[in-house]
Length: 366
Image 1 (cartoon, one colour):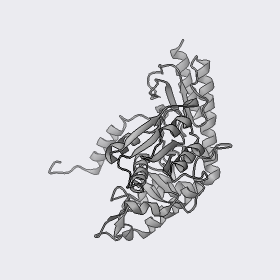
Image 2: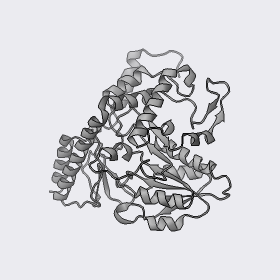
Image 3: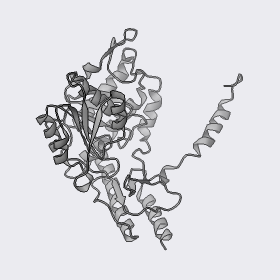
Image 4: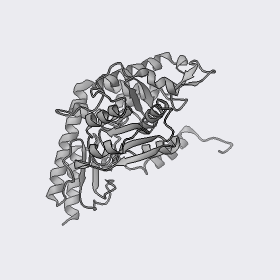
């Protein structure tokens, strides 16, 4: 830091040049985040100085968090769900497993059982909490093999995990069976729906994956993905609101004398923005958005197959995966661990973007 500051114009110009080095969204075909809704951006600025880590100073913003958790709970078939807004799926998953461990203090060498599709946040979680992570292989269509999962659970298992909207293939585990395994072994059941939580409810004939399934104890859900909120905004939802109390620590110098969140200072801006989007769009707005994403996903599949690529699985969400390792220069795609081409068709991936990409694919293969 220099002694003498710069003008606002100079600083903004400097930062604008760096921002121009970032990829534009219309070339990003691999991200599970998208451009925030304009109302989320406007509300984010309105609440930019709020701190949910000291809610007594910001009671209005704290009420918005409660409203958002209630709205998310309704979406997940449990209006009275407990929980709070996190920084994203990683924090939500970590906190869920922390609770699971706290609820089983008698287990001396605890393990968790997760699908092969589990997000890498569970690797971090097990490292931080000193847990063994048992990884269940894929069954059919890149979903968890529930028979093998049942075999891998034992008396030292504190939690089993299902994924609703897998990161690599966009698949949905059989949550009902996973939850039944947890109930039979008297352990915690967590559903990672960080991505799928804002997609599955708005599909035609969606499978049950949330608190409508008996035995599901917690669920992660990210408004900063298809909830169109500003980054970062995740959420942890709990069937039993009191379960969060086991994470409580003293915070004597704050307006709330107990705190159960992972981080202390928490911005209210993204939370207020997420609630604003849900209130503004309603279920009809989200249904229309997801329908558009699915239509563009189907167009991508048809176009890619016409160019000689083969789908790995039939998309059930707005994720499409193909065999073949080559994509046109200038487009940001990603690859699964099996080296399959992976696309996430978010709202910024419009039909025009799809057609432009397919034209480049066709030209590349001539």
